[in-house]
Length: 85
View: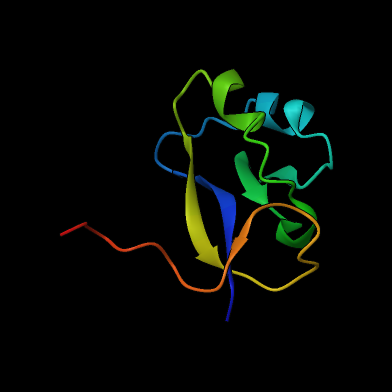
């Protein structure tokens, strides 16, 4: 399975303010039960606009297994190594 550069929400930090939702151009994030959720990862452009607006530091980017159109966002065939030699 390919990997995509996607926003990951840390539930323990998220307060559900919705600033990340407003910053997301392709509207991939939604607030569900007071928690930001990446509901449309296939449409994410990997642009990271959601990160700087988060006052709670609840979002970071990571290479995650994903499916979807390879023309939307940044993709890799394999995840990056956990450490370099």
